[in-house]
Every structure is written in C-alpha cells, then in structure tokens.
Image (cartoon, rainbow, N blue to C red; front, side, top):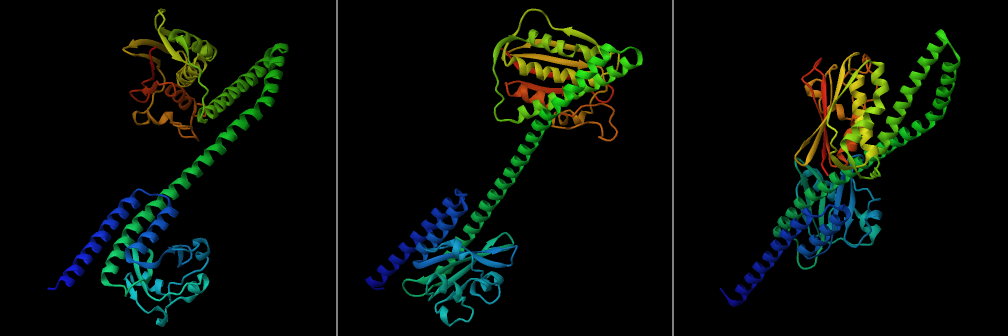
Length: 417
C-alpha cells in the first residue's frame, strides 16, 4: 500500500470521525431545543455542513391539506416557500414521502419528477439531490433534502448520515410541536378561566345593587307589618340574605383565582380568629338550633396570618358544617398545639361525607349530591376558597369522615409563630 493511499484513508477516517462527532453534537442540541424555528434552522445548517453541499431543506406533511410544504430551507425565506405546495404525486419529495425510501439523483434536471416551480421561485438551480424520509414512530412526517454536492456525487455514506440526521430531527420537531400544542391548550384554559373570573366578578357586582334594594324594602315591610305580612317579609329577607352570601362567595372565588391575594399577615391569636369566625355564624346556627361547643383554651396561641382572610376561611368551613348538620345537633370548634403547628378543627354530627369524596369536596363547584336532586344549597365554592386561603399562608386543610350519616371533621393546620 502506498503512502498516498494511506494518507487518503487517514483523511477519510478523520472525515467520518468529524461527521460522527457532529451528529452526536446535533443530537444533544436537538434534545435541548424546543423552539421550532430554531430547530428547523439548526437542522438545515447542520445537514449542509455534514454533506458539504450548497443547501438543505425540510418539507413537512400538511395533514389538513394532503401535501408537503417547505418548513425551512438554507438561504430562503420559509414563509415565502411555504406558500408553494409540493404535491405528494409527481414530485421528488412526494415520492420519497410515499415510498419511505431515500433517493439520490446526481442529475436532477433530467428527472421528470423534478418540481421546478420551487427552483424558479427562489432562482436556485438544483443539479444534484439527496432526499430521505423523516420517520416518527410508524409514520413519516416529512422529507429532509440536501442539494448540490460541492465535490463529486452523493454517496451511500451521505445517505446514512442524512438518514440519521432526519431521524433525530423528526423526534425533535415532534417534541417541539407537542410543546407548542400544549402551550396553546394552556393558554386556552387560561383564557377560559379569565372569562369565568370576569363573569363572576361582573355578576357579583351587578347583582348587589338590586339585591340591596330588595333587602331594604323587605326590612321596611318586616318592621311596619304584622302577622302574615311580617312573616312573608321575613321569608323574603332570609332569601335575600342567602343570595348576598352567595355573591360574597363569588367575589371571594374571584379573589382566590387572582395572582395576588393581597395577604397582610399580622401577629394574631388563634383564639381571636376562632371567636370572630364563630360570631359570624351564630345567627344561622341558631336558626337550626345548633349548639356551638368550644374546645380551646383562653391562653393565646399566636400565628402570623392575614386575619380577615383566615377568618373568611373558617367562616366558610363553619357554614358548611351548619348546612349539613341536622337541626338540634352540635358543632365542636377546637384548637391544640402540635409541635411547630396548631391543629384546629370543626366537627359536626351531620350527614357525613363518602370516603372517596373527601378530597373532591375541595374542588371548585363540586357537590356530593346530584345537582337535580340535592337537598342542600350552596355553590360548592366555600371549601375551595377556605383551602386556598389557608394553603396560601403555609397551612393545610383536609376533611375526615367515616361515611354517610357519621358526621364530618374539617381539620386546619396552621404554622405556629
């Protein structure tokens, strides 16, 4: 073997080593890049470099309109190229796509399948072409082409290199598309949630004025009437108060869904929070002849919490206990220190909660009872509001129940100051 031939072999080995190294680099980069346009440009640039050709292009399949379109091409505006549809039948790229086989043409102009419309549009003369399919799982998503080998003709080695590049590229493009689709879906959900929040805020605001008028007139009628008229006015007033409570919950839910709760923590005792909360629900509790049992001492246990919003959380939990308690029952409100936390609870002797629903009751608008046959009111947002307000301040809320008819205990753990 001559020195010249050995030198040629060494150069060939060095070239292959360089190509393999670039393929590894490309694989790492593709797996860490999720921007679709950046991916497409990187793939065409790398293919041009590896195969030492003048240009490379990526054609992707349009599922809505069965055809191929240019997603990227070296030195060309992809937006302009994308306007030129490449047919599946009667084009080189279409043949590669349909047959799922690579194609090498070192004299393109003599092939009747050469789609000259693209070349005419970008003023680029295609002399030689290597195209390979871009496989993803059990389908082909497009075609990767290398155009005009700078020296000599495209070889079997070029086919292997471009095929590996296309396989990596297909996976990366598919991942980028999935990410983009996920982002669009999340934006749609976000927009839907914003519409819901806006509706709740507007409805709550707009209903307050007529409701205030109803409450005002019902109060006057109750004071000025006697007998049956006074009782009717009282029914109207009670219904209006229930409506106002629902509007308050709607406003609180809107607040909870906002990015900023506006928490203002202060040093406050758990006893004060519980006492203020109980004061808020004494009237509805008395209407059902419920006994409120205090199971906490007078020695203050301090927390660093937003007092108003924490009271709101406990009021919602207490109102839930009242709603699902039977007349003449009792509700126990307790508190005890547990290491670095304070455990508080609201226990009722009411209808209980199915064990498999203990966590679902904290979902927005969820009701254990079927909507068409339920016997208890409420929107199903009091408990989600309570959990959200407590968790936003580092606490925890959960429910315990042995099942239907066994009552419920709602436990709230707060970080001790």
